[in-house]
Length: 339
Image (cartoon, rainbow, N blue to C red):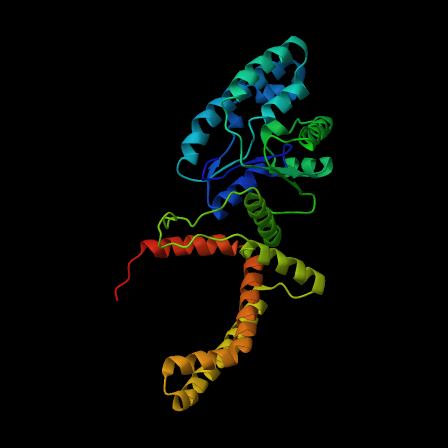
């Protein structure tokens, strides 16, 4: 397995594959591989007359997808993470939806030869949606060559995807129902999706390293197993919904400043206790340790409250706090400061 994860996003037309690929490209971070479907000269004719132009359209897509994935994937994974908005195997799915007879048999022979040379993803994110949702999203983006799409074709395609992935075992699969998960416009939904992808990567032994720091250096501690910030962000999203807590940037900012003030008061108590204990023990280090031990329960509470409001603000702003932190620390690692 490559030390860099390769994620492929799949789902029916209009489900949001390209949008999610770009979101993950920013938050992991990773390079993004997008399908170049506009270059297919038969696409518009295919949607106007599927039976007549199906074979030309499918063969062009097969060769184009193979050329792009065979060239780009291994090259990219040699130095970084990769997110693609399509899986090479999707070509087979579309072919079985559009081709029959000798044309399908010829296609399958070519696909079998080419498919063996394309790397398998470390994780496939399968985006699901109802036919009504797909039709609404297709109409909203209003691509000229998609205006002639028939509802029946989109429904057949949705069913084909469900049948394709129901027993899929070639690679780890994360299925997400997007009917009520608007990661395009809802920051909280976006943070939830990103967090679930990261959790799925960890579950399949793909660890996201510190970016730009040189994680192979002995002086850089490796990230351990267990819960991470995206898990805590998702918890606060659920907690706020369950308890009816306010999800507002500025309200939570005011609460954060109040918690920072409480934290300051707890630290002030530690400083005062240190000076008083110094007179008794005569050793500043011991006095400081005993003072911190005395106020530790209060410090723990205030630090936890401050972290909670940071997580809530990140949720409301649609920010993956872990990725933002790692990106900034990666920049700091490369910087030098005048002492």
